Length: 322
Image (cartoon, rainbow, N blue to C red; front, side, top):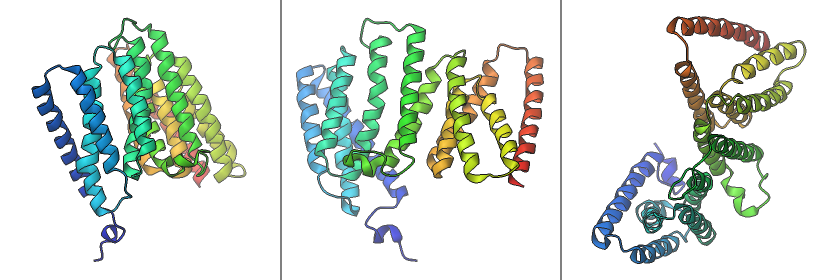
């Protein structure tokens, strides 16, 4: 059979994964060897970090083909990891400042690189750094400021909400007004989905207000989807089904945000993000059940009630799809 991947000039994704693991092994080996030789001389780490990032940018100047796939994952990718890792080592005692400098370096590397895959990695890394900067300041990661629980909750909720807004902005192609980001909407969508799903885990489980907020947004999007696909008398049954589904997530943030993400992913048929949010939703349901401060018999009653609710939801689904 004809190999379409080779015809298109790209390696098949299983080989990309294997080569990517090889690049990570190369990066970890380089960091370990240099750490054994340098042994705590921070100026040396700073110089080596700058050299590694410069070389990584130089390697990622050409467009992708099969050869550049390999050079990216075995040369540029390890060099980026080495450069950022040396930066962390040099600024371990001032983590907030270090993370800010890492973000600046990632943005500059994105601007100077021309390789599409390199830019995808740098976008994901930059989006990860944004919440880490605040965590390093409030949670005492190398600083003297200890977080008040509600401040951490507000920050996680704010970043998760912002990232979900960015995710929603990528639903229609061309929503990014900066032309430089127009080719990276799927990357931004994937990164924001993963980061928002992780951040919601740091919100305290008794923060029902946050869960209710996400559930309300989910109900609004569900109504829009219903008007798009359902008409007539079935629309009323669909509204009732949407209300039941969204209301059932309004008690727990780890269920409410993934449910919203599932609706947004279904809107654009993004199966990767749909799988991410679905897995996070299942994890949220499991966490909700086991975190309940209830006797086992009461949890059994709750499961029976949940079963009845699911049967009712199934009835409305049959009414809508019949």
